[in-house]
Image 1 (cartoon, helix red, strand yellow):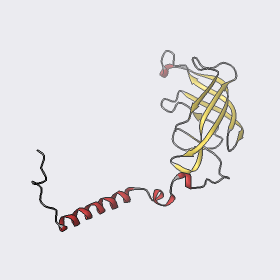
Image 2 (spheres, rainbow, N blue to C red):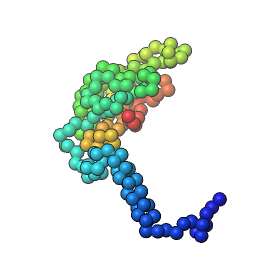
Image 3 (cartoon, rainbow, N blue to C red):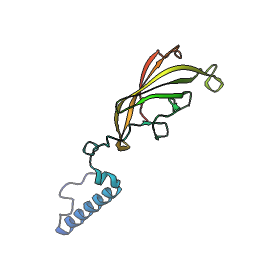
Image 4 (cartoon, rainbow, N blue to C red):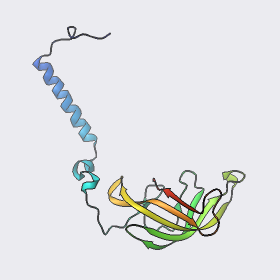
Length: 164
């Protein structure tokens, strides 16, 4: 049942003060829940990045990595991993390496499958601000160029977004 304006008690100065106090308390509690870094740092675009800080690649555990020897591509099931990575470069715009993509063939099913090696050239690119650490840039794209055969049905040249 909806109350009409005539059914509500009249607004008194005392009631307005209580309402204002309640709103201020609610706002104060909400502000207390925001992390301190959000209060003091300002938007990510306003914070300068350290130009000397290297760009990172973020792994499945949300850890920053620089020139990792291994990199897990399939975070959910572990059925695709880059191993033996040898980094030729690690720069502000791109990083390049060669290594082996170990891919589970999942035959007859993944738990019984075998890992097969596929030689690959790796390029990390498209550095972006890392939302969880706005003062750090992370590569957001990985390109795999298979130098021999590629795992079916993957094309020999494939690019993925890194969303970790």
